Image 1 (tube, one colour):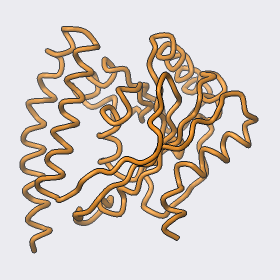
Image 2 (image 1 turned 90 degrees about the vertical axis):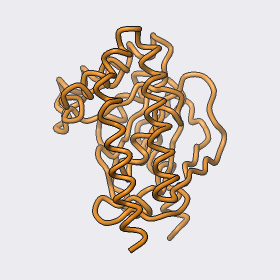
Image 3 (image 1 turned 30 degrees about the horizontal axis):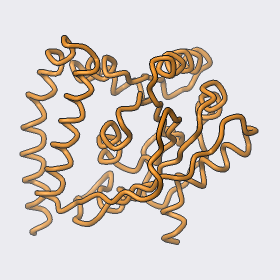
Image 4 (image 1 turned 45 degrees about the horizontal axis):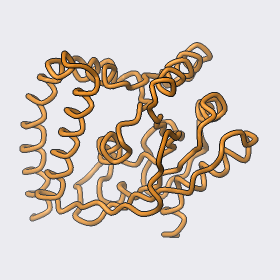
Length: 231
């Protein structure tokens, strides 16, 4: 009963507060992308605060935090890990599914922030567009974040990586840093959110230029290390 009540309070406070924040995002964008990034990180901190106060969910970060530009490859188990990314990973350009970029106002703000929208089908045209936009992000001095499994997965699931990861790793020629997290334990796709600690773990930087099979193996192992440790 207490957990259900906390979920209701979180939903009421977070979503009610998020509506005006999202609607006013275009105003922040008028002052440039740098201001918009600060605005987005403020919304992320609001989300983390709501999760801590109403759900009892806190965050623990482990491993060496990278410096300089990198290609982040991250596990995606819940909305929580996706929302926290702009703040936790120092405002990277994020590769996300096109459906999110098509949401009115929010999608426009995401594109202005620097998100790269890709189609689920991962056609050749879509992949080439992703690589061009990622190259522009690198030129602008920003890191890039991709969820290489392509979609949100339940805790414990370890699907193979989608083709877009290998092309991005090869073309960006940046060190790769894996990000494991176990948010799905507390924030399932269906059902109540539970109190506890969500762990994010940085992997050691992997140099660019590795053969595709080796790069994919290291990325897959790195993003799943917390699931493996729990087996």
